[in-house]
Length: 224
Image (cartoon, rainbow, N blue to C red; front, side):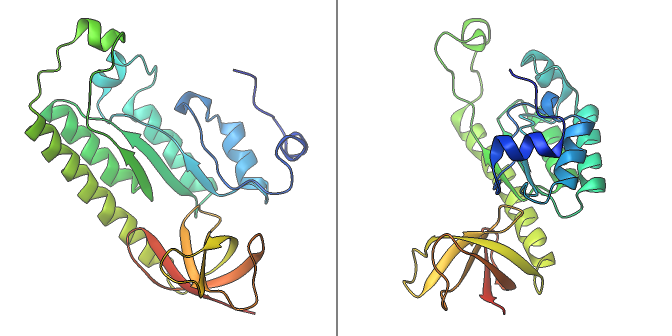
């Protein structure tokens, strides 16, 4: 992997004027300097995808992730300190019951805005497929997956409610799937916002006040 840019000028030269997501492929890449640069650079979206995979250290060790739960939570704490309104998302996979509960507790502690959640399935030719038995019943996997989905939905809804009344800069991306009189776009935290079109057009940045929400979507109105 190439080294990450270490200052604002290099980032702007690399990414251009507008950066709408902060997807980090591996937590080891999120250094103090990178977090500080994101915090100090206005055109980097305040949204970081930091895939934890599991909240259990033994699982992380078996996956050769080379970080611990404690180290990961330290990264999260620094992000929240330097970028208070940062949107946070992650990837989650399935595990044993005790390991699963460690992941549930980590999700509650972090309070992600959204997450990509998966039931474990064996992939051919991987180390896990060669050395580990997939010995968890499908109904157990489904129950655990549903539990983390419910935890995430509650977290997403709570976070969205905190944003009601705030005004966001939103990139207009498309006509809403539910109504041709509405646009959908994304806030600086990478949250979906739906609002009446007014005189805006796709590609514009508009200021939108959040009026209501679901766990997945913010609903707002354009303000002058």
